[in-house]
Length: 534
Image 1 (tube, one colour):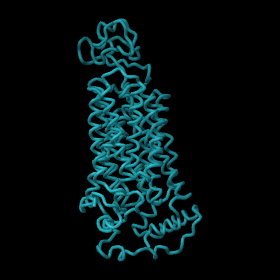
Image 2 (tube, rainbow, N blue to C red; image 1 turned 180 degrees about the vertical axis):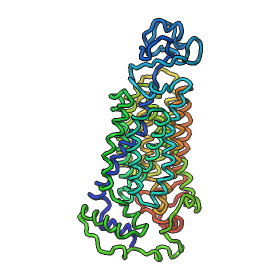
Image 3 (cartoon, rainbow, N blue to C red; image 1 turned 90 degrees about the vertical axis):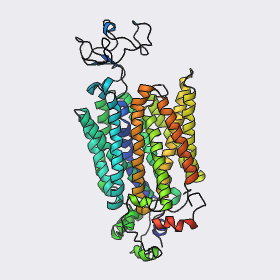
Image 4 (tube, helix red, strand yellow; image 1 turned 45 degrees about the vertical axis):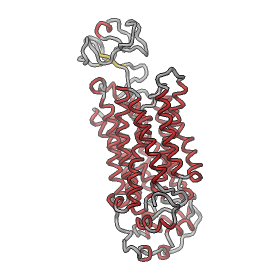
């Protein structure tokens, strides 16, 4: 018999063992979410002006009657004596010069102390806001490549624990960084750990449950990420000093050092590597939790290597790499489309998350509402993905996101109530969350076990390209040139991704996970519904 038949007939598709492992694997994701988007509040867009020669460094941004002689108000302000929230000083002008030789004075009415204040990331240094955030996603890209390979080669648990240790290290030392370069390096470390935690945890969960429950991992992990966003918004609203905020995010993660004793290796991975004795130990633990009896030497009843590969002569125990994704036609098509769709969803998700007020409103409230909206989106995905299917849900999510962005741009020239913009933002966040969660369920089902972690790693790598681009769009282009440089490109790419999914990828709902590339290329044609992929 195949391993799936044995495993689910004894352990079941979902029981107490799986539930406990799910809970443990998802907790660090809350902190991953906070680290991922903390730069939004660590380095916010703070009002600033040039400091006068004899002015104290802690001078009030707003009140100084002699300022107007040296620092003009913004050009659209008519009354030079009326400094208000909407009529502030020109940020980088001193006596008609476009530089500030004496340093800067910041508005501390909303943010008492940020990375902007500490390292003067303003004026000609503004680009560093985007650079520092992009280092996080460069780290994610590198981590996706490394963890994708290592997770398949050395095991899910070992690599997950390495990633967890890196997140704890980066989070603990971030508040202590003494300069921007060190802080950027720590952001890189945190980003590097992200795919090792989020991606591998989903794969570990996916590999311990049955086909009817495969919507659970991405939904639960996505909900954990949403809770992390909500918690980040609440903490950022309360702690307006970035050092306090970074401390609240980083230090509590130390509790996860205990995971060495509490999470188990993927049984499916152990079997694929023929490590049957270790798999038997974990199976018996799972059996104890799920009230199941595990027979002795159960692996002798599994389909042997010769039986499973007689028609190909290929050894399934061999290690597969990234280039194997492109060697066969069906696998290649699935890989290429996945490598386009992942950066698109990542670009939109992180782009709107990093700039929560790009449609207007309070950034803290918009960020929290955006996180809250992810939860009903995740629940909607959970209750519909097995009924509607992966393909329609992905395509509709992409299309709705594009439509809302285009609507927001078309009404941007009119005076509209702030609530309309907030609703459009909430729908965009909900729809792209639905896409992100569904694609995390869908993509592992497209690839066989022998190369699944590598495929997910490469998908995650390409998605970081989208996040890196989003960093520059949100922290630089939108600030300098306006929302149109975010809205139009995001909408077009979203439409294209939806069409590719709808036309070229097969439906996977209810189908068993493929084990080998040969199953995909040869055996699948007798079991899959007719699609263009065939």
